Structure formats: structure tokens, C-alpha cells
Length: 585
Image (cartoon, rainbow, N blue to C red):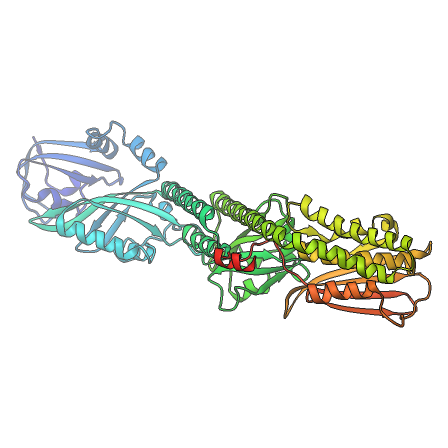
């Protein structure tokens, strides 16, 4: 036995002395601190007596065993795992934190790695429940509070996932917390548990859900593209589906207009009234348009305000777009039909899966456009065969009659008539070889002016002509070329021909302005009366195409400007029902 008369005999501090002097009965284990400030555990067995810790009566103890702190901790943890240091390392490696909450005082204790798990600066945590609640993302805070209340009310295990506030410029950080409630006399006094970061797991789960959602959306759009005959309804379905699937604030389908310069907002979601159906971007004024068309992969912008590759178009600035991505809608012939793009009002990092989805939708739109074009070409061919089979002979007879009136002899009649019929035949060959689809203006010019290409300059954008404008312009260009060879700049060795054209929107829609300019030819003067060639040009341009013809005879040579409203086939028109088709036929 050991008699202890003063608390300093065992090195107990006054603060800890009452802990082992309380009536424990049997034995007690208390923490002691020696004068040398070494922590020890004292295992006491006996019947302690109360004392004021200044002096005490003799106390008989069966046994006093003083252990070093580390030995006691190891012995206490041995039932769970032999080496507590390994447990701590495992928790830190797995980024698992331990917490406890004293409900009466609202004091919260965290393990040393919890601040790092919550992305807090060292020492930021003030050990209060209020601080923890503030650190939870405001959108998740009600759900966390409700989960805590439910656990306290029912005693069931606590489980919740929440985001913590990491700042607007950082990705979301997800935490998963579990715990249990300790009750004393039916009252919840304490909660304890663990939490760990599950951001990567949440990201993978969201990616799987997103991929499944995107695949389902593509399947639905693909089915709709096969059955929908109205391209407008299909495009509206596309933009609404993309907006819900990604999800994003703005979706746009831009149509590249004839001339490959302007972009028309054909369909969209999120844009202000009046934007859809208007020109929103041009290659001439917006290098963003040029950048997209020249890119071989989708163009992604995380922050338009910090963009240095191109200037941001006005319509994106006006709608306060922050992030976006765009991809080209490419046809099977390699030409660009337009652009499919999305934008967000908040900063966003688009994933590779997002880019793949947008590209797949763009390919689907391109396929739908091509399919509808083929259907319209077949319909057009049937109508044209009905129409042209009757008109062809009357047109040939009219050409022969007009050519005969202006010819002086049979040889001249034969040559002129043969040349005009061949011009029509060449135009017809261009259209039929192309599958009765649009024909390039540049290709038509090179066909008509083949022998004089070395003396001809071309300047203008790529323009596609439908069959009717191709036939009419072919006839007009043949007359102009024939006149230049007989009387104009092509009749002299040094004469030149300049051909300039442009496409721009007017009150009649997209309009082609074509200038035929002759240089370094013989002096020209206005004829006293219009010949058959002039009357033919006026007929095909003004009457057949509803265009305009302006000619001038100057010292530099003959010039003529033809203004032709364009219909374009790159994007199909609205579907026409069978009754309308039969009436038009």
C-alpha cells in the first residue's frame, strides 16, 4: 500500500485532482502531470476521500500504477487497431476527417485534417457550429440542417452530402458526412462522425448521368430527324433539347447565308425578342466568325471577357454571355452550312463529353439538312420535268425566231442560234451533273468564259445558284460574252474583263449584285436601238428573276450591273404539303 498525503506526491495538478477523488468506487484512471510537465496516467484502486488538495488525511491505496501517456493511448486503441499512428495516417491519406459536436454548447471539434478537407486556411475554424453552417454552400445548407435535425429527433444515423464555399472561381468541392447521436437519459447530448471529400466521385456520377442523358437526347433527335419534314420544327427541337441536356442558358443555330459572309440566327433559346431571324454576325466585321469557320475543332471559350484570339461579337456582349462553345455544321461536300453553339451566363468549364455531344448534334443537323435537300431536289426534278418538257420547245422556237430576225444571212443565223442553244445546254448539264442542286456561280462563269479566262479577273464570295437562276444567268452571260467578243474588250488582243460580285441582305432578301466591266477595248457608244442580246438580258434578269439591269457606255468601256434576288438551297425551305405541291405543279 501507498500513503499519499499531498497531491504533489503524485504530481496531480489542482485542476485534475478532484477527478480521481470523486466517488468512483473500485478503480479510476486519471491523467496526471508531474512537476517536470510529463503527462502520465495513474491507475488508482481503493476508496478515495474528498480533499481541498492542500493537505489531506492519510489515504490507503491498494495500488498506484503510473503509466506514460503514449503507452496508455496504445493500450486503449489496441482493441481497435494495434498501432494508432497507422490509423491516423490512414485517415489522413484517405482525406477522412473526424468531428464531434457538443449540442449543449454548440462546440465542434475537428481532427487536424478537417480544415484541408473543407478547403479552409489553417487556423480558420473557430470550433463553433455557426462557423460550420456558414461554410456549407448556401444552396445545400437547408438540406444539411434538416439532416441534422432528423438525426437528433429520431436517433437514426446521420448522412448527407454537401458542397463547401470555395469561391466563385473554383470548382465545387463535395463533402460526404456520416455520424451518430449520443443520448443521455433520453436527451441528445453529442454527435460524432467522419466526413471525407467525394468531389471526384460526384463528378464521375454526374458524368455518367450526363452521358446517359446526352445519348438519350441524341437518340430522340435522330428519330425526329428521320421523320420530321419541316426543318424549322426540327431546329426548334434541337435548340430546346441542347439547352435542357447540357444545360446552358443560350443555344444558337446560325445559318451561313449566300456569299459565305453573314450569319442568320435561324433558331435559338434564351436570346432577346427579335434576335431569331436576324443577322447577328458577319465575317467582314467579326473575326469570331472567321475563327470558327477556319477551326477544325469546336471553339471553346471559358471567359469571353479574357478572350484574346478574337473580338467578341456584340450580340454575345449584349446578352452578358460569359462562357461558350461553337462548332461548324458541315455538309457532306465539305461546305459549311452554319454554326451550332451554346453560351452560359456564368463561368463554366466545358468537358470533352460536352464537346462531343455538341459535335454529334451538329452532324445530326447537317444530315437532316442534306436529307431534306435530297427530298426537295427529287420534288423539284419532278416539277421541272413537267414544266420544262413543255417549255423547252417553245423556248427553242422563240430563240430561233428572235435570232432569225437579227441575222443577216443563213450562216449568221446558224452560228448565233447554235451558240445560244449550246449556252442553254451547258447550263442544263451543270445542273443535271450536280444532281439538280445548287450550282456555283464561279463554276458557271468559268464555263461560259472558258476561252478567255487568261484575260478575265474574278472577285467575289462563293455563291450557289438554284436551277432557275442558273439557266437565266447562263443566257445573260452568254449574250454579254458574245457581245464582248464581237464589239467589246475581248475583240482586241489587250482587252480585259473584270467580274465583281457581292451578296447582301435587302428588302427583297439576300441579293446578288453582279458587275460586268470591260477594260482596254475599242471605244464604245450607246446603240440607237436595243438588239436581241440586250432584250434577252432584260427578259431573263428583270422578268424571270425579278431583278434589275443597269448598263453604261463610258470611255473606259462597257459596264453592266445585274441585281438578282437569291433563293438559296443550302438550308431547306419549309415543307410543302401534298396539296400545295399538286397545285403548283
